[in-house]
Length: 267
Image (cartoon, rainbow, N blue to C red; front, top):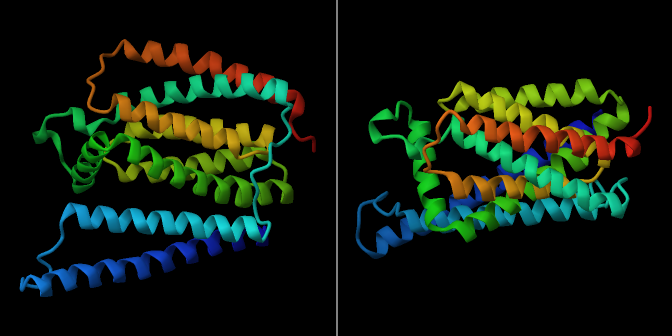
């Protein structure tokens, strides 16, 4: 447990350090541009500068976290416990399940598809602008999101969750607690229904990692989730689309976990 806490604090410290230094550099650049153009301080806050600066910080953070956790053996990209002849069947079912969860996510929370007057909170406005930018730059957005998800899954599943499960192998409790925490964080958005797809996705990914002990299928699932989400944002869905979610998610989740069950760790 001490190691899990150490991994979490290490990742948090590196993240805060990169954000602090990166923010200072972006501030210096914008200030230099203001001075060069003889503008008032704070005038230069263009989307392009903030986007470039933010992406540079994200990639720097991802590379640094990968180097630290892989170089020192805190986590790995091992193939896990699932045999190769079963692995591809599991990944296909995983892709179908995550596509269905992305559809559910867009049904319950898709602010870009709503009229402008429906925005209530500042977070909705921020998400809407982010979604619009991602729709304009889909390929680059997928690359950024893939880097973020690969890094987060390597740290959370490959290091923190692995260490907790090795310390106390109570996956039902550990994964449920993790799912509840992530679901509560989803309340930061202006949609309580977002708890449902968040809880489903986190719980499913947690059990996939528990059975496979590999972050690779979890990363693949997250990448598929965001690809489908980018394709669907801005689309207005009718109520019958929930049946499509059930058709995609339920059989795929059942098959994925059933196929991996013979290879799960034993207490």
